[in-house]
Length: 218
Image 1: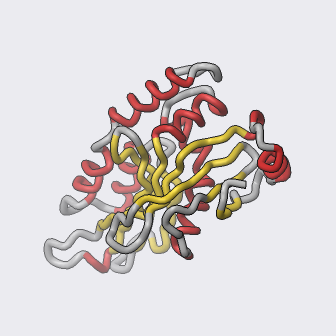
Image 2 (image 1 turned 90 degrees about the vertical axis):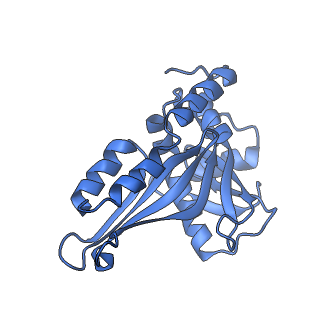
Image 3 (image 1 turned 30 degrees about the vertical axis):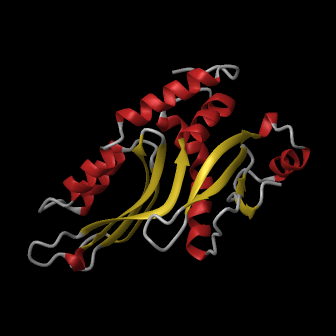
């Protein structure tokens, strides 16, 4: 659905509808993957079909055999108000008895409904998740890398910048009892940025470069 740049209400409504329609899809998919007999290839096809645009990274280290190993990073609706970055792993070495070779874990990165709506309104001009996620894909992966190396400090703000715009990040209480989650709060379009320093950083960003992840908004 097309979204005008001067219609934030429509952007929020369309994005919320997209999230509501797919809220339980990741749980259902993980359950299906864990059923006996689901192969790596079947799982890869299922993930691509269930989450168009949402498979941010695929890493197939060993495609077959008793040591087959692969990982996918999936940005999927968790609730009607946000996306959640989840890593799905296939490891054939876990396949003993009834144990499933499939496993899932949180990567501690979230994207708010508001950030998605702003991206749709300001930059993409549409509200479908398959259109929005590719725009912020590199930003989310940059945040995931930063989450892994840390430290992420409670109450701090962060930013990722590329040639299209800026994603502003905050923190949430630990999701696993140990690590703070990063959550994308809003999106600033590079072409309409009011802040001159941020606009200059966007202008200088290379199209093929990974977004920079920095502490602070400016």
